[in-house]
Image 1 (cartoon, rainbow, N blue to C red):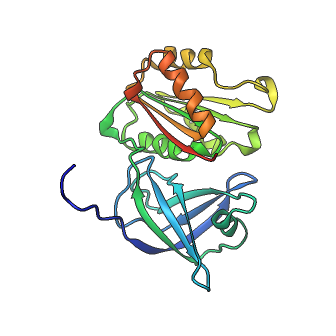
Image 2 (spheres, rainbow, N blue to C red):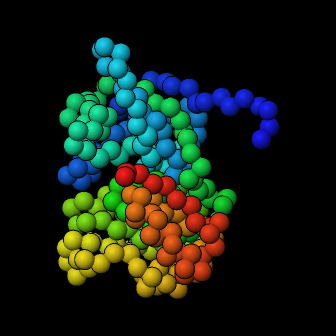
Amino acid sequence: MSGTAFSPSPWRTATIRAIKPVTPRVKSFRFAPLDRPHRAGQHVDVRLTAPDGYQAQRSYSIASAPGDPAGIELMIEGLEAGEVSGFFDTVAEVGDAIELRGPLGAFDWGPGDGGPVLLIGGGSGLVPLLAMVRERAVRAPEVPMLLIYSVRNAAEAIARAELAARSRDETGFDLTLLLTREGATAGRRIDRVMIDTAIECLGMPRHAFVCGGNGFVGTVADLLVDAGVKPGVVRTERFGG
């Protein structure tokens, strides 16, 4: 490493512009654009400070594509006993000032990176991948991209209607939606057959991004490597225990 000191991204205050429900447990929060451009897949840190000075901090992926004139979008799942997510779920209102830091992270993709691109998300792990899907549509529609999205049921599927419409209308974007607790795919998890089918449809990916809970990500990453995807191609982002 060089001797240059690392300078962390500064905290700044952003105002909530809009709030809307996404699923029964997830809400969308819009903020003014960041003063530093982000790449699809990156995240921001969010910090809340109580009147007594106590602070709580969490990281949330950015769902919006870079340069979205509506501002940056965070999709936050309300978690039981969650210090930060609980605030956003039950307290936050339009006009509230929130401290943000970022963009941060190397889990990212841009049009210049090319493809094919394979995206695999579990539950709320869809959010950074959604930013990549949106970025492709705006700036790189020629790049082949396939998304496998695993979620418990249709009601909990983030951006389900949007993804279905993109899969129908956008040449070169394909969607596999796996509902693990309802319908014909109940009880199924992402497996080698599903991975092989995706690669047959898309071609061997130049980039593969996997996001979700720890167990989900580990299993899917192993399946990708077993299917012949080079380990250096697979990039992962995890959350939870």
